[in-house]
Structure formats: structure tokens, C-alpha cells
Length: 301
Image 1 (cartoon, rainbow, N blue to C red):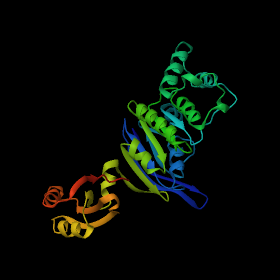
Image 2 (tube, rainbow, N blue to C red):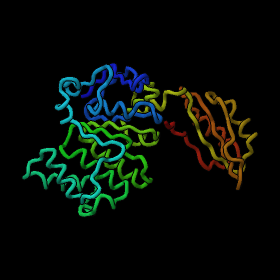
Image 3 (tube, rainbow, N blue to C red):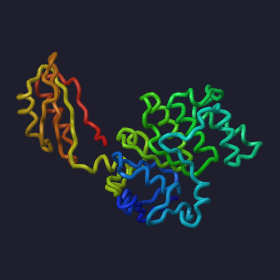
């Protein structure tokens, strides 16, 4: 769907993006992850044709950004970090204006606006002035703007920046819904956001790609250890340590909770190639401890 080859951007002597290459596949939700200043926004702006690269090429469905920029822009919906809205307009009037700009046929315009109002949760605010809306609602209006012409690709720059937790969940659900029909590329520096939303992650730092893989593969790439949490009633840490230390695969035992109210919680580090949970359970079963909780912890980004 999108091929990026040796994409580079200099601002004077400063290299914001340094010869990055990657492909984006049809129907994928791709997260561009990295700290502030890593080059995420610059990369997205080059993908959309908003700024020109210093070197390298972007191809979208075999169109080159150097030769077919207008054709590429027709395929892409773009929402910058701050939605570019006319704040003195009503929501409906603004979307009607965007529809006319985008060349939506008059006979299809009302149906398209109604569809976007349903998808983005705008029905109750269609006759509100945009300036009076919360940031979360403004982001929804911006999303409706970005997908007005039903683009095949949606590019979102920090779509949840500055939103409260409820608004983040709402925008995340809208993105997932859109991702069932379109290719979505979003940038963020929030780890939990890409983990909850994206199929694949590209991590960029100082203008270079440092990781590119599925969300699950990246979570498992940093080490070959698993962690198991065990909570026991009426147990002493020294006795637990002595009982579990000899189990094959157990590397380390740490005390997490000191046994307040009689419950001791320990964290066991084990090799990922072995699953010692059966042996752990059998050792505990041989004692008079009461097993309150026992689970393997999921690795997170």
C-alpha cells in the first residue's frame, strides 16, 4: 500500500529523519512510536505530501510523491495533532463546507454527513458552535473531516494528545472501527495507546527506526524471561524462597508485599523457554499455605 525508501529530512544542518525505509500494508493499523522530537510528525508530514523530503521516496499504490502528489492526496485523510477547524462555524455547517471542498456530489452529501456523524458520535452536537466544544469533541469533528472523502488511508498525528481518559477511550474505539475498513497510520509517544490500538509498531528515535514488528513480537523482544506472581496466606518469605528456589527454570524470587493482613506476595522470574507453574503449584500443595492468587504476568511495552 505504502512504500517508504530512504526517507530523509534536514532542517538546515539538523537531520530530523535519517534514511528510514518501511512498508505499510493494506488494512493495517500502524503505530509510529517514539519520544517527543523523534521525527514522527516530520515523517507523517512527508507521507501526506505536506512537506517535501530532502531525499528518498514515498510511493502510495505505485504513485510517487514526487510525480503524483495530487493523486496521493486523494487517497489520504490527514488529521494533524491540533485539528484545523473553523471555530466560529456550527459543526454541521463545517462538515457541509468540507464536503463541498472535497467534491462530494450534492445528492450524496447529506447521507455522507449523517454517516460520519454516527461513526464519530457527533449527532448531539451537529448544531453547536465548534469553539464551544471540548477538545475531545473537536478531535471527533477533525476525524470526520479527515475521512469525509472516504480515503483508503488515514494518517493521525497524536490523535489522543491532551484528552482525558474517557475521551482517549472514545477516540481509540473510533480508530479501531475505522481500521476495519482502512489503512491507518498514527503517531504517539504513549505506550499504552499503541498497545491497545495497533497491529504493528515502528519505534523511531532521533530520526532512525530502532524497531519494526508486530506489537506482540516487540513486547517479547527485550529479554527471555517471564514473571509469575504468587500470593500466599500464612507464609513467610524465607520459607517460600527455600521451597521454590530449586524448581527448574526459576531464576529469581522477590518479595513484593510484606505479608500485611497475612498475605505474602512474591514475584518469580523464570526462563521463557520453561513453564514452571506446575512444579510451583505442587510445592505449595505440600505446605499448609493457602494459595490466594497465582498468575503469569503479561509483558507490556
